[in-house]
Length: 149
Image 1 (tube, helix red, strand yellow):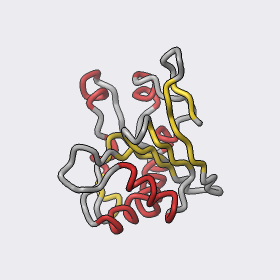
Image 2: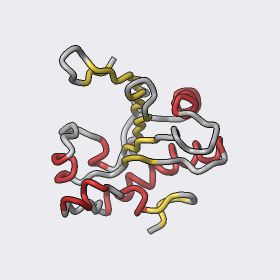
Image 3: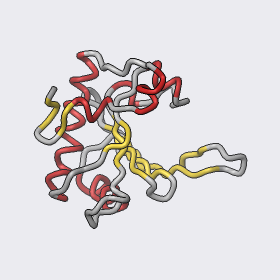
């Protein structure tokens, strides 16, 4: 199923954890509409700006998959409102920091997170409701847990 000009549903539901563990990761029609809004307002503007493929490491997660990977109970991934982008290790000279800076400066995001010194970028967009424009940085605390600054 086509989600946007440069994105298909299979890219947004791909999960090795789901495959290996027999977990269904299919979004509802409402989630698909959220994914389309996310693609139109976040993914496609990034793709247009940088003119290279944009690599998504995580997007939609069913409740069962989210529980299995120990995701947040309130994760926007479960609503089809969030994607994680990871450009590192690809042949394009575009870094995760470049993507982060573009999102912050130019896009109508709900939340953007610099995950562990730009290991990847989490970005969300809400189809309905105001965008919070929340900018966070994920770091490990002394006991190994994650905190958001």
